[in-house]
Image (cartoon, rainbow, N blue to C red; front, top):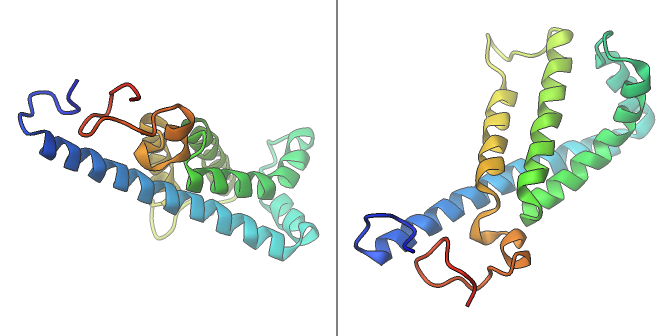
Length: 164
């Protein structure tokens, strides 16, 4: 089955598919890098300083039985999520987790009045959109997911071909 229905030139189709795979890779690398750098910043800050900052930003409506463990887990979760996004491993599930993390950070920031940057705009909305893109499309051909699903060797010019 050709990857582009109605496309008579398979080379055009292959070029478009590789372009999409490259865009997905750049998206994964930028989002993975963001999470990795965020975690490194928290580790360099030190857990006591991070937890003090975290608790100052935690909304009052979040119960402590949830907020306390979440504060301990965030730096580690960011590191794991970032590394898995860069590798393209379990991309759809990890991108969904990352999207929920950004959403929780956004709710926390909005509750303390720090959601927008210069007006009604927040970079978190852009990041959530980029992560939704990964939830829908997965890792593309340039991620570990493709190899783990026994699809490393695809027939040229096809996206849906069975392994050779």
